[in-house]
Length: 334
View 1 (cartoon, one colour):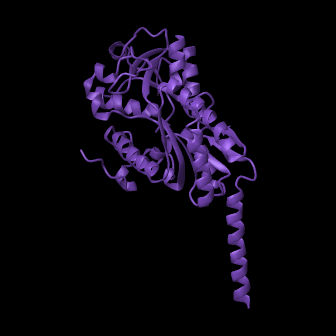
View 2 (view 1 turned 90 degrees about the vertical axis):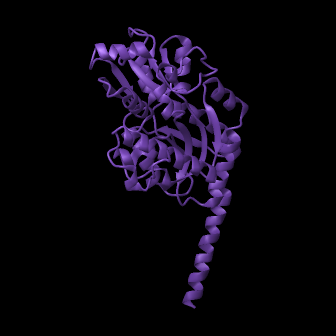
View 3 (view 1 turned 120 degrees about the horizontal axis):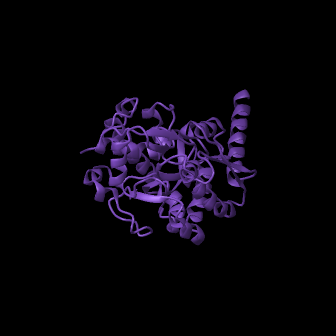
């Protein structure tokens, strides 16, 4: 009799879990943005989520939880219940935490709801710096060692990867790295003169470039952008960069691994539809982002390839604290 009762209780619990997933959401959802207000991740998430809310029939309360190169936000979601009520709204950085010695978690501890878009890196400068192009910047660094203030979002961020590329191609650059909690605060500092140059996402800096509050130095891509066709590519300044490009950040929504499949399916559908909203698509196009809108196995394959290529770029540049091999990340085929 005892076994029968326990079996009945277990079946009842499973039934309740299924019903809860079917009714999802029944309360507010937390959206944890890894980076500060005004940056590219913040912009993308706050633009798409209202459309997802309409489809879900619920509310997503977004909060910027900065610090630790995004690790504080990631760990917060990792420590929450796997019930779909805490979303991680992040970028590429967690895929480099292990090799950079920043943490023992990455996106393998999560399920990708949607990889929304990817961005193109661009090097931008304060209007008052005494150079207007990449060659001029390199000459300034050579003539003024240890003086150029280069903005950063910390180890594993876009700026650190672009800096790794520059070190690999040009040799170690004698500059001062100044860290910020995201490209939004860094670009504000750039425009105010606190730093001289910043590797940033085109989508976060394009409005400042258009408004004339900062100047573009080089686009880190193999082809020019149709949004800023007069900005030269980095390969036009030094063809050796072509070995590392194209490369770029991405922006995605994740839930903790183990979240019920029905909840994952509802969130995936909501954000897939939201990413096709005409207003959101127009914003992304205007800012030079490339839409992805992928989930499931396609998203996982993208994450695996991105991690493999970028982790080994950092390893080869001497910036990784631990070899990617230690974490089962194989070196890309040459």
